[in-house]
Length: 390
Image (cartoon, rainbow, N blue to C red; front, side, top):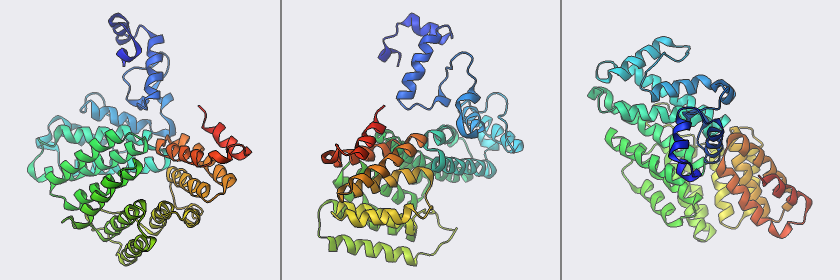
């Protein structure tokens, strides 16, 4: 970063010693532009305490992330469960002796905490602790006892897949791909066939965001036909992804609808159990949202807008997903020839996207603006363009 900013070695040395607050301020501004979570920066502006830059009461999560990155060095971070942290600290110091099922469970609970933070606060708030957990697993998985290694690898695969989804939301497909590949590697080492198939599905869905139809179809087919032993709900999600591929290729809508019907039937008969090796969020609302995307790609935006609206008004989505699928609805409305309503919905999505730092949502809104170009003289469309300005 110093090279990008044209800093000399002398200037960099002054920054490292904390003697150049103006340059530190410049580094912070560039870090924010590059979406580097501020909580992970080693430098801070003089007089600014860390508590002042961690929104939403998540300072304890960031403190835990720093402690894990430091491999348990220093005092224990504040926690409601100091005994658990004491054991985790011992495990980080001597993984072979102390890294047991209780520590794995603690890591699993922290990963669940990160997933909850993502839905309400966005990827930037969930990333620090998620990356710290993955780093701790990578650091110690070779040292733990064989009876624990498989559990830790399976948890690492889950964490890396989740981190990949966070970077997708930040519109960083390169890092997301790296993390999906790491998830696949750990799932293979853990002997988890379902997670391997699930990662193929996630990479297929990311291919839609980059417009890579060939990869989308190939990975969806691999997830469907491979020996992955996918739970019924995830299997239904895979079949619906194949429907999306058909829609994008312009196949007759009867072929698209056939796949959608098969997926819906599979979902309706899938039992809800907690013993599945991989629990899926795929439910009727998610099915409607994905079906709406299929209708948009199949040239049926009016039906898509209705499906999006049904789910958005139900109140079942997280804050971040409300913004993202609101943007998708706005695009369907624009393609349906409803410029004012499309712009109105998109303006709301921009607000949510900025709150949750969802670059993926902003990218969809940009597509909405392009679709509304022939109506750019209308006041509501102009308002949307103004809202998008830096």
